[in-house]
Structures are given as structure tokens and as C-alpha cells.
Length: 233
Image (cartoon, rainbow, N blue to C red; front, side, top):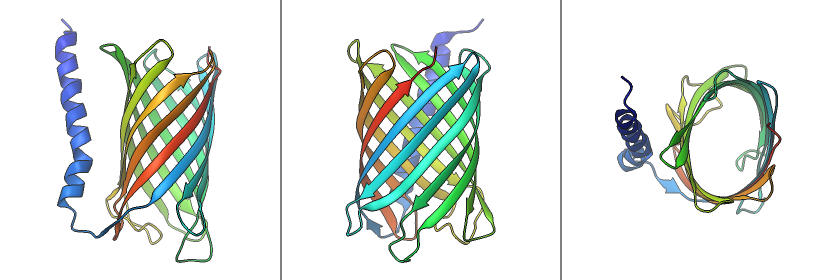
């Protein structure tokens, strides 16, 4: 017989282990570390036609520097709701990243596949997103492959307000010339507030600590502001 109490314990152990991974990586790293202040703004449009899903999400990212432009990235994808708790997605990303040491920007194209699992967890909602990316720089021939795992928990505070806590780990599956990180690529730990503005719109504001495991490791402080339009029925 299925025992939900045992299931909760297993999830709890996995959450603790997953959240300890970035801490272990930072503690074991002998890299010099630099820190930047950043601000990320994004708009997410999500909807569906029955069991078929779609979303588009442009990001504008700024950094505290002489040239504040850091990145502009647009994600777009289509998905399929295979069960009430599982979704499968296929999508693409186009991005431009400013390079301080190079007068030209880095233009990148990605194709990605992902599985999303969502389930109630006590009073909260736990979401796992596993994404596999194939990444191509417009300036280099080799493709880079990366896997990303994000765990997100939303905890209701009031009828229209929730606390969002997430951690996302990035792992490179191969090494190419234009990627400066090794196996461990980066980690993003986030805490924020979700404010429901209407039946279809919400505002997300939070703080992210972004570790990038480059030869000179970066520990970036990021203000994240997101506007979500959810047209799913």
C-alpha cells in the first residue's frame, strides 16, 4: 500500500541533499571570487489549448558596470500535459551576452527539452523542472550540452500572496572552446514573493544568489522582477 508519509520523507531528504550541493561546491572551491550586482527583468506568457501548452519569456538582464547591458534572452516553447502532475516540453532560446574583454557580444542559440513535475507538498506546491540544453555559439562550430535541475516550492502566505524558494543547478555534459566553466557550470538560489494581481496576472519580486564556477568564480547578487500572464484554463 502506498504510504504518503514515507513519500514525504524521501522528498525531504532529496531536497536537503540538493540544497547542500552548491554549498559543498563553494566550500571546496579554491578559486578567487568576484561579486557583481545585477538586475533581471522578465515577462512570462503561459497558456494552453487543451492538453497542449505554450510559453514565451523574454529576459533583460543588467549589471552594475560602465555598460549596464549584460544579457537579453528569449525562451519560447511548446509542451504537452501528459498527466495532472507531468508535462513534457520542447523549446528554443536565443540570447546575446555582453563580453567585457571582447568588443563583440556572444550570440547563442539553444534547443532544449524538459520534463516538469508538480505536486502538493503539505500546504505548499513542489515543482521539479529538468531541462537538457543543446547550446550553439554563432562564432564556434561545436555544440555544448548542459543539464539543469530546478526545485521550486511555493508556500501560501495569504489568499493572494505566496513565498517562492528555489534552487537550480547547472551541469556541463561536455567541454567546448567557448564555455569557460568545467563540469559544474553554475547554481542559482532564489527567494521571492509572488503577488497575485488578478486571475491571470501576478508579480514576482525576489533575490537570487548566482554562483558561476568559472576560473575566477563569480558570486552575483541579483534582483529579480518578473511579470507573469497565465492564460491557462
